[in-house]
Image (tube, rainbow, N blue to C red; front, side):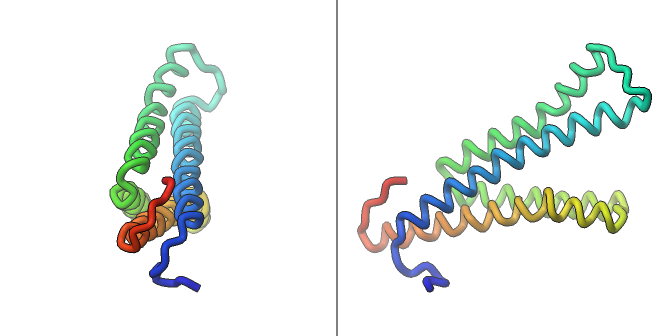
Length: 144
């Protein structure tokens, strides 16, 4: 087992990249849907929306979508920076949860749906970046 990734394994590196980017895409979709739902549900309890209300919620939901696209594009070229951004997002989620005094059930949900995927995605990007560095040091060319 290459615990410290001292050998070049291009297949593992590419799988880590693909799965890490998948976490970013799926996470971005989850954040966007959650933000849109929270914007519409927090304002109206009677489930009657005007087009303006939906557009306003959609504009707000575009923010996490844009951030996810930005992190995805960054991950194509700078995996360590993408990992750092994902870790910072996980830390920001924890800080927000502490400030908002989340209840235990919300902590469990946030940990499973938000925080864990961010940390796993960051770890995958770091593995891919480390493997890329090892491959470069060994002089092997990789497709990735």
